[in-house]
Length: 373
Image: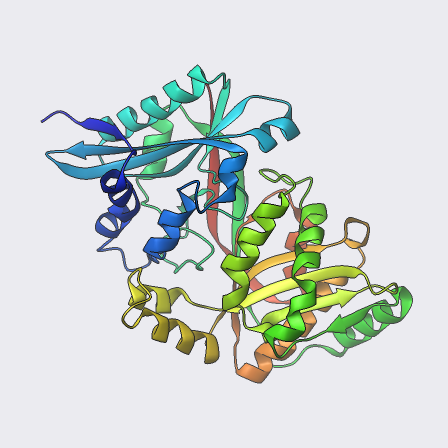
């Protein structure tokens, strides 16, 4: 039977779009299902302020009446303004191992982007660099963090067949914390603190963290301004992400460094690993999903390093090392030895140097592809 491509225009097609991965990955032991409602909310203008500056189209593919593929197209005006080029995005591609399916999906997205004046397409990319980005091409034997993604290994072959080539890669690391830090680490930390008048803050409650939420994202916009895929997040997007992420943070895993003027010099946000809890939740908070997540938050066994930002002028001054030292102390108190990072751009050498003091492996790689239209 012929493959049918439908635009997502109603609840039926939106449900099929969001729920496709649950059937596609049902036998993949390392897939971590996202929350179904969160995924839906991200794809409707009423819930996601990214639609204020993004034009979006979504499509699903059907074969014999069954949903077998999906893809989205995004025209992000803020990204285009920053780049000075009409570069569109494809987002959230998923499909069975059938090149006819993937070909029709990508042709549909590319045709729309070209009609809208785009001269190139890149992806997988989301609405921002805090959304889904990159296709996993190495590390399928590892469980991803909740802020990362898992993809079928055959996707690479499909992208190549469709004429896509590499734009850039994100690297992910697994860090092993030692039982004790070397004396040199404490001496360097003390020297940096005294030389630059730095002050470390640790938190035990959400109330203590409250005054720093806006400041974290203000620094985020500065610290990430030159990196691929990033642009200055508007205030509505900042509020969207604060509301989405901060309620689930364990304040003890948020580290702040202030400079001598008591301004934010750097931040680190980690989270007890929720990957196994999310697998048990199966995309739903109820009836028991919330319990698995709360248990993981309160009794961590591993940790995910979600986000780190340092003032551009201080990025080579060792501030990141101070943040990691503080994180090590908390991890040691909780008996956590392993940390999974989210994706770090392969050319972000300053950030990658953060791990040089710790035993680590680079075990996963995600790729952004590109294609001229």
